[in-house]
Length: 350
Ligand code: ADP
Image (cartoon, rainbow, N blue to C red; front, side, top):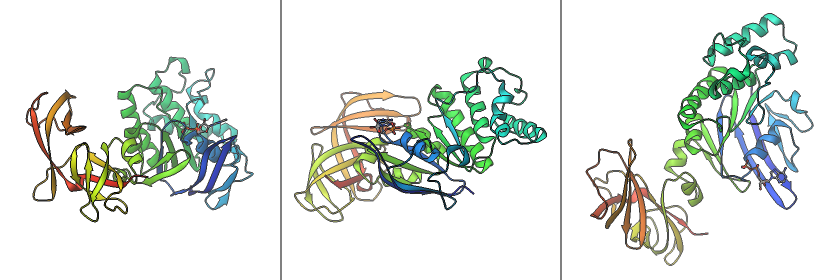
């Protein structure tokens, strides 16, 4: 149980089209991360699925049942929204038990379920603790246990880790994924942080101005971003504008960094304007077809796990990210770098 289908979903606020004919499906027990810039419609999408608002057009189906007219509390959809804080005057046990009490489950079952969930979120023995005595991370674990307790068919999470620091988020996001999988719950996980989305999700949905820009497994979005917008949002490389000088398979584009050859993503003819992505992390080129970029190093930033290098090539500034083990580069040095044509993607400019 828990197959969700969204068909032609549209929601307007006055002149603003917050969701525009959105269509996708989430399989049973799948975790879908919903990603997009601020204002792209992520929260609106969750509110419609939860039933807190009605769409202007389109349908939401859960296990084949149309949810139109089904009130929120009858949808068996769980919420973990940032603004849905824990009840401050109830202890941990009563917070987690809340949904089960609403369902009028027997006391013994409630105890067993709350205890099992506390074990699962790593807080055994926390039953009697008051909410104000918990750390930020512990509160989020309790909130997660509370939303899972009544066994929702779908769980909606809206920036559940938004208020926590990065180290804690990176740890908790993996715990959340493990827990959702062991509970077998279908989930939509809204975030604006792409690294968090990739870590939690089976697939990622990227929204742009209320429309689906791309949906697919994290690796697929990285390997094959559908549009320059996806590439920019996921920070996959440097984007350059240029003009096609040779079309076809080995498309060549004149850019501020010189003529670059790459993989065409769409129909490109000589003279067309184009967007060119040069990946931040070019692979070793070996025998394959490649571009030679010659310029000088403008800036180097050592980040521990990686090194960022900004290079001036022609009139362009390109950013690269290397493992920290690459040979020394320093600002001011002349630099020559080979970038495989496979690491350069070219789209027609809209
Ligand atoms: P996100 O969650 O991706 O930041 P939202 O779903 O909150 O985006 O908003 C999508 C668009 O709809 C934005 O332009 C926002 O200003 C607008 N919007 C959302 N809720 C309302 C509302 N209640 N009244 C008017 N406009 C709204």
